[in-house]
Length: 298
Length: 298
Figure 1 (tube, each protein chain N blue to C red):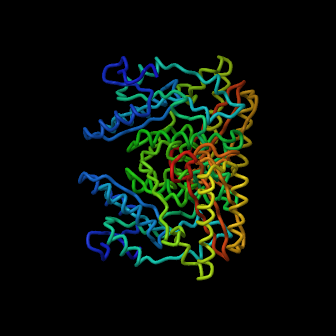
Figure 2 (tube, rainbow over the protein chains, first blue to last red):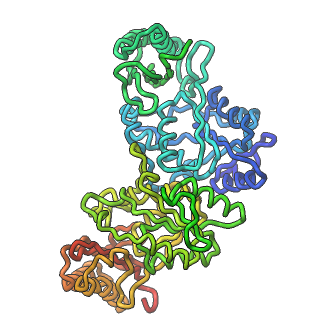
Figure 3 (cartoon, one colour):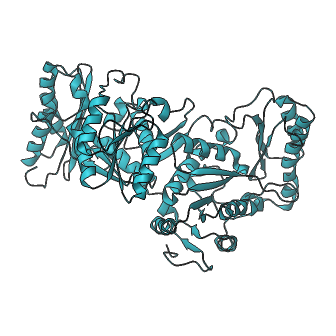
């Protein structure tokens, strides 16, 4: 609340904490002829998030970044309390990247004590991260619906690192006729191949080294498909061998699925999503790659 | 589909069957400075519906009426197949009342075969009509969300005859931050007291006479509260006696509840909702009245 309607410290960028203030700023931008881009985040912004911001700014949109660690998408065994936060650093990155509005809601701005409405996407949430994180995608779909209704963006940008989340949001937008264009952006990786994630900061040096096996396993599968392997069972077995070298606390899944339905394929004949979730110490990491057996050089 | 983009026969009013056509017409109205009013209906329009239309027209809004018998809000034991329809009559009533756009979607325009998203409002749907109609309010909340996203109205009008539906929609709009103002309009009754309902046409003459007991029971409770009765159990017992004279096939509920939470009250100290659902032959009728024990002349 202390941020109120005050302008943020950064030149040209505002940050607000109230829904009413967001609506006012967006309405003013729209009156001045701007179209609106939204990048929903949980903060602790990294190069992956910033690639979404850059896409929106490059599209010429009045770019809104929301920063909200949404409690309803964390389960009782998830890492809500450990989730990293750096509001000051996030605001500086946004201002430098040309963001025009940051929405930093307090928890009580987003959820009333008697809130009782949720958005549910079935089927797509039965696989991959769904079983290990019951309620997670309901929380995601509900908070994204709220953010869409608050900001009313023309376009919203999401990373393909959370491939299932992107698929769920696309399906929700289609099924509920939401008037927004969903844009998916490629995974951004560190030079060593590790996919950018806010949770990477939770890894110690040893865990970071072991985490490189995730990308290695995906590249292995991609290369094996490139030379003609078509059997998902063979490939997942080989990937599990590589991941074992990461000495994980657990492997939630290694799956080769249809990128639309997220259902397992029996044989690799079209483009597939190869996705995995691994627990390294207390930290759960996910990564994925879409591989088309008929594309040259995948 | 045959209606396509063609203008309806009525002067000044259009009817369209495609979502894209609705968006085009509404965008054009908004560009010309109009605000948008939506009256969602299942057709077979009666004076209750028309009071909603009149409210929107009187508010100066570009008034959109949707006519869609939504299959997802009917359960397997409900009366989807019996639900009355009269598209031609509905269009004439809309044109005469100053409606500017009627949206008559075909079923396949609203639901794809692999649709998997729903909106759920808990707690408010546990009482009254909820237990007898499992899934009904999920179907209502989902289709109303879709209609809101398609039409993007400034205001949407609903009748208080479906009091629980109105409460569910208000809660959904609040919880999901939907940018629409929900307007509730009073019940419209026939001169004999029977609440207007599309289902009234399903009653035979004898059932119609017996149906008058519903309003009689509500008036009895109102009058008894007016002279000091404060015990819901006493009042519901007396109402059940009156309803028994209607020789119902069944009484789903007679309830005295808080108008906000829809939970039963132990003693009538503030305004209450008195609501009932009765089966007369194969037809299920609902009615209700809000009674404030401290208001003069209720």
